[in-house]
Image 1 (cartoon, helix red, strand yellow):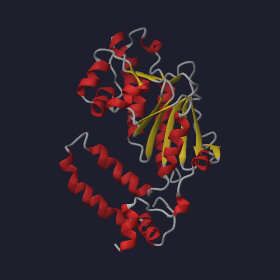
Image 2 (cartoon, one colour):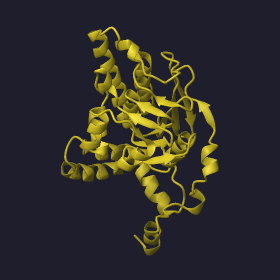
Image 3 (cartoon, helix red, strand yellow):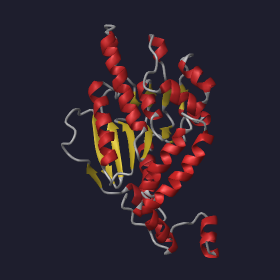
Image 4 (cartoon, one colour):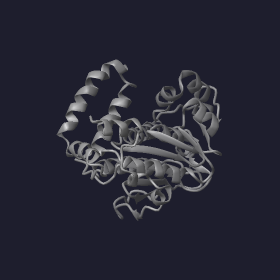
Length: 298
């Protein structure tokens, strides 16, 4: 690497000045419905396309609870987004100013039907595991209460941005249940066993500032700003090679299942594998030629 390119890297200026993201322009990206008519299963999720980002809104008033239809719909939607080469990121948020999602509708469990409980546990798991494994970058814009399965939805995302008034909890034990959509595992991974036990076993509800302090969310913003902040962050994903992003993400998440040392050789192999991608050659040459890369997601 020559001295000029080294200086650009050291200054963290790896794009031409014209590529600097302007907040107003990022937020005014043309919005369009995403694949109208594609998802007829449920009206409880709405989807818009913002540039290379899919904005998913949980739209089930009054508390944006999850039910069978919306869980199946979320899984199908994420599977479709994984096949769409024009989508690099997704943002998920709740409709209205008060609730991100209050989790499961407990009316489903009032009669104690074990078969229904088994099916719903499976539906929750399939939906949020699909969200966790989305090949792009997923961001939860927590615009209010995120309780139970609502918080587990946010935990399945790569990044969480919360509004200052948001409240978060996994209160299932208070009604004789437990978090069955990854909450016991993902929460402990993010915040440590102690805080996970405070929230799950002691039923402690936390505010956004506490969530940021313990590592549950990465950013706290003022009321009404989570959606826009998340979309702005998602727009930055379009500056990265989508092939590189979907190669890197499993390496980062893999340490949850195996120790980090077991992934070091895998990391090196995936680095070499990237040289099969058109985007790798494009990215390197765009940098050397001082221009923006034209990603093809191939």
